[in-house]
Length: 190
Image (tube, rainbow, N blue to C red; front, side):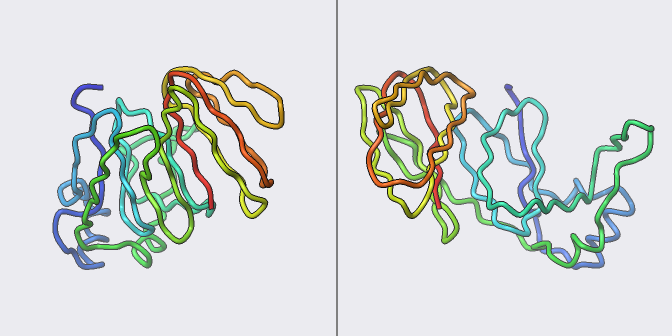
């Protein structure tokens, strides 16, 4: 939505003591870096970076499977019984980066571009207008998420229609698959 934003790191270096105090005094947002966002923006948020998604944003989040989230602020939201949701203050203090983060700019152009890459995964944006073949090996799976438009996937002689919001998991195997259509696809692999 117009005017949407997210929080990404802190605006200045803070100590663990200040972090704790701001959580307890409900002033944490005063030192969080609020970043306006628009469709197509890409953020690589390193582990330990404080972050929160604002209202009016639909995201495609790619992350290493850890199932660990430490909540330090929750906008006074309540659970089904009316109680404040649990915060994880001690754990967050132990692992949070309390220095400003540098956002890396990602230039998105062409039919196939790398959005983010680290030792754990690679994320590419594909636009298969006119068709494209993608190589896959038996060393890793591919995860496809259609973020806009519609198209098709052909794998092992089987065609599958793709629409915005679809997610496809392709098991590791040696070969190729074909993508086509007027769509944007996020491809992730390890």
